[in-house]
Length: 224
Image (cartoon, rainbow, N blue to C red; front, side):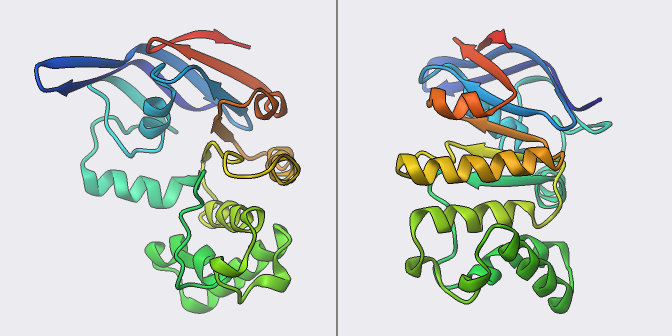
């Protein structure tokens, strides 16, 4: 069953007198439980597509259905609500708050949902344990390795029980052994039925996914 779908998605940027056609009419259905890798050369449109899926940007034309709701034309406040409640983000650079501990970083999305402090702490603690960081729960990011920081980011992405987890080069800052550990964690989430979309340049990362969508010149050129 499709939990997200884009129809004739177009994104055009204007840079002075020049128009940049980042997406040129993309159609794609994302099914519940998909573990999808999005690949393509620089400038192919894959990062723009991920930003649109994450409601970090809006399309120039086309529709984007998340569940049954067309989110393509929502206001900034409505998009913020969608991001808070339906989408989990994993970034290459982790994007952790340096002044907060592991559990406090995981709690951040729950704070924006208005959860109680007690409920947030219980969930964040459980997620820290799930990603193997129970013994690091009170540590701050500078006290963690890169792989541990990415585990915190994955736990934070899971905090709001999202429709979709979006990962932007999740192993890009990690050595190969640590990257393999992070891919094993993502695979475990996939086996639990989570829907994961990852943008990557790494063919090894793509082989972990169940579906590979390749972009070229703002269009999908293959979907396998």
